[in-house]
Amino acid sequence: MNSKPISFSRRALLRAASASSLLVAGGLRAQSGAGAAASASGPRLRLIGHSSLPHKMQFQGTTVGGLSGLDYDREKDVYYAISDDRSDLHPARFYTLKLSLSAQSLGVAQLQSVTTLQAPGGKAYPNRASVTTDNPEVPDPESIRLRRATQTLYWTSEGDTRHGFAPFIREMRMDGSYSSQVPLPAMFAHDKTGRSGVRDNKGFEGMAFSPSGDTLWVATEAALLQDGPLPAVGVPGGPVRITQFATHSAQPFRQIAYLPDAIPSAPQIAGLTPPASLTPDALADNGISEIWMASETGMLVLERAWAYGVGNSLRLYWIDTEEADNVLDMPTLAGAKFKPAEKVLLLDFANAGLPRLDNTEGMTRGPTLPNGNPTLVFVSDDNFNSSQITQFVAFEWLAA
Image (cartoon, rainbow, N blue to C red; front, side, top):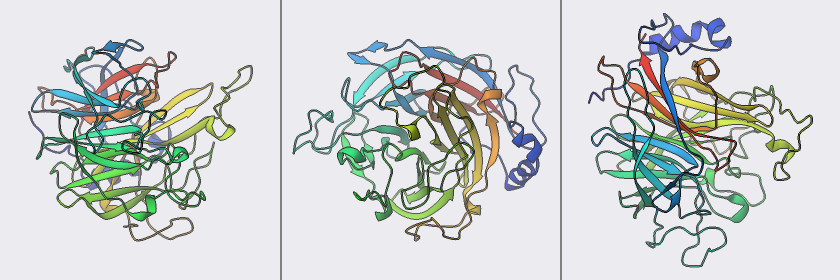
């Protein structure tokens, strides 16, 4: 299958950025139908189709749900989907599945196997009620990526700062066994005083290899405590760090800042009773839910917002990582001077023709269509909630 990088030059990026009225109005519309013409201002996404899995579907002794990361293995024509179940229902795990995808339709996911993630000591990860001194970590899996050169899988955990579990990036073998861990810059370490490090449930949410496989990019969901505030309704959040690691050495060597959007909608609580677990500042949020490298320097960034009583908002952006300053040596970004990544809106999912939007957290390039165009495939995390869905969505990438 053709695996060359998606074509989108810097010139096309600047052309798209200049079409500000179109972008602000809602982005480049994804259209159904095989003959959708490419926009003069840049690439477009044409909706191919969508499908979903039953709520709490049972497979090989596990409950399917919480799919928060997705990657496509083109040699085997399978997808790897990681669940963010913190071993509460079943041990932390990923699924291998197939999707029937053509230019006209997307079939229902066919699960092939489930693999348990193993801690460094070789055991399955415990849940928060069964932590022991020899198995002390509970992960919150969020992203999964195949490293083709080694046929190993990298995955991220957001951690759980309230319970003392640090976020991490790990490599595992295909059988789920631990292989290695990526060392993290000190800025990510959570300070118990609440002044620095990752915020609770806002850690490593997105991850992607460059097409060459030489570098690995990892993004937090929101700004670090020392870098700025969370987004608010009508007010953008502080800068999010997206870090580049050299794959061969696992060492960080570059980091850029990305500014997430303001929360687009205020929560609607009139006549409703929000769960007691939702604090006032948790009734609405926005942040990065996944990234993907379309070229060595061109990155897709998926922003996912949610507001109680309103639902989800999803926007897909393009950035050129070379055009942003390197902030790796800056311990704090609040009040600092730097050039963040410039964002170009490719798609507002509200215009995509989908019957509903949900908590979409997984994104990957899928197979190449017979006409040579790439596909992008997304999956939503249903949080094991009966009011949400595990939804797969596929688009065709139409070049400029």
